[in-house]
Length: 131
Length: 133
Image (tube, rainbow over all chains, first blue to last red; front, top):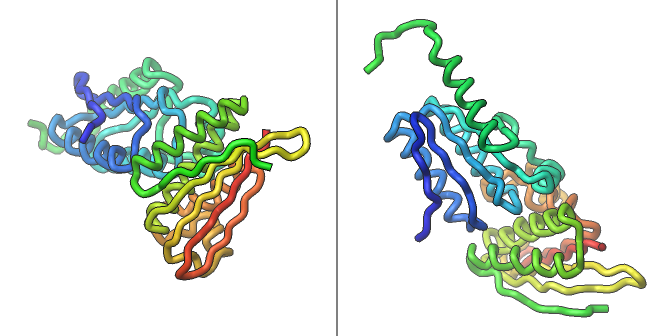
């Protein structure tokens, strides 16, 4: 079965969805991403959907799941590049993707992730669990 | 009056992708705006998935219809599954029996101009939608 490639860039993971996904492929991506986050101890996930022509409730749920699972695994997700027609349709469908950070394009998405990670790197309390 | 009509199977998740592409192409031929195309393709995806997941598979019949001066794309999703016993409840936002978000039926209704649903428990479900140009 084909898979959506996940690229590791520093402490982030980068995913560009460029195919019209069938449901199993979307589920596979969810699984692959979570295991990659754990494997590389990634702190950020950027998902670019600029080539996606639709986001229906299934894909919307998958994206929300990925964001939630990443958060549980201590990684921040940013969704980038949603086409305006997709945004209009998604909101009318009843999904506004609360809890998912978005950016207009990959560049801004990376800035957002970087800002989040920098802010997070400021020392708060040391719990001695650093490797 | 139907100007063009074709029926497609919806029995696997790759068929769901296929019918999305068919609807995209037909909506493009009818010169629907990009937003209207996107809405129609999204509604197609929801209803085809319903027919597959809840109806055990079925068909989608696509038709280009004409009403006076205006043209539209009519889609009929038909399955022979277990049907829906409470249609009113099934059309509510957030009501789900499949573990989804419960936006498939209610959401796709908002994405089209005409929406009709007929269902008989044990016999199956037919959803007819039209988006006018």
